[in-house]
Structure formats: C-alpha cells, structure tokens
Length: 255
Image (cartoon, rainbow, N blue to C red; front, top):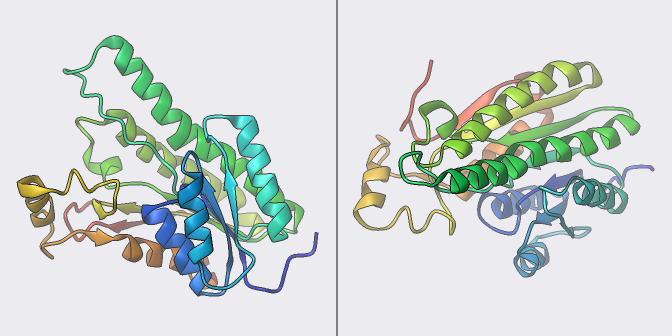
C-alpha cells in the first residue's frame, strides 16, 4: 500500500488518557495522522481522537494481553493509515503487590497481568508493527515508554519495575537488529507525571514529598513527556537509536 503524503502514520498505545493522549495530540499538532489505541476506555479514546487537530485519525482497541487481538489492531491501524511510520509503546498497568503484604496467589496474578501488558503485549505490538514497516521498505521509529522505576526500583510494584527495565533491554536488542532497516528504537523513562492515573499518589503530603525529590520542585507534565517522544521519533534523532532519555527532573540520576 502506498503511504499517504498527509503527514506520518502514528500508532500510540494507551492513548485514551495521560501521556498517551498528550502524545497523540503532539503528533497530530505536527500534522501527523494518529491511531489512538485503547484497552478498555473506548469512550475516552473516541473523545481524544475527536479532539485532535487535522484529519485522518482513528481509534483502535485491543487487550494487549491477547496476542490475536493485538495483531488485528495493528493490522487495522496500518490499513486505515496507509502504513505505519512511528510506534509509541505507552500502554501499561501499575498493580501494587509488595512482597511482604500480598498472598502468593495475589503475587502470581500481579506478575502475570503486569508482564502480559507491559512487556509481552508491547513486544507483540512491536513485532506486528515492524512487519508493516519492513513491508513498506523499512524506515521508522519505535519509542518505548519505560520509567524511572526501571533504574531505582519499585518496592511496592516490583513487577512494574521489572517490566520497565525489560522493555529497555528489549528495545536495545531491537535497535541493533533493526538499524540496518533504518528503524530506530529508543525509550523515555519518566518519573512521576501529572496525570489522572497518578492523581491519588500525588495528593497531600505524599505528593509534596515526591515533587521535592526534584531540585526543580515539581514533576513532569504529560506534555513534556510527549514532546520528548515526538523528538525521538524525528529524523533528527535517528542516531539516538538504542538510547534512553530520562525525564524526571533530576529526581534520580544514573551513570
């Protein structure tokens, strides 16, 4: 299929709110056409798509833990957009399961559900997307949304921390594999971000403490993370393939 000349074709997973919605808006504002993916919140995804500037946007749904649904979703997005130029693996779940405070059964469920979406689901979306990129002659960008927790640990959400570390290793493996096909693979690693999902964790004294972790005295906005994702998806950032961009206001520094 011949790709449209009306901007690039973008697939953003978990785009019904938060970082995903802000990322969809940022790409659309740059003239791109966006497939807004959702897992459960169809109404929110429809509202996001309807609010995007420009035309040619669409909504696609799939449970990322369902491999067949993932393949159908990616194929539908590529068909309707005329190919895929950029994939943003943003969708994720954040389930609390401190090792000293959960039953063995709860522990098993948390690990299974977290890895099924955050790691295996993202890997499956990536495989399906890359087939379209290669079929169209190669070239493209993949940006994985990781987390500060991949490096400093997540004591009450260990599966989340492990999944976000693993998505970086996965992306770096693909950066080496896909470089010859002119497909760059990068990651962003935000700390806490001002989103609806984080609202409870950022309330009251605990929120004040988390903001004070940064010498800037605040946390990132979803728009700031989206801007970094758009940059990493640009031709100017192709040479950054394999890299991880920390977006945490110096609240956690690594060598």
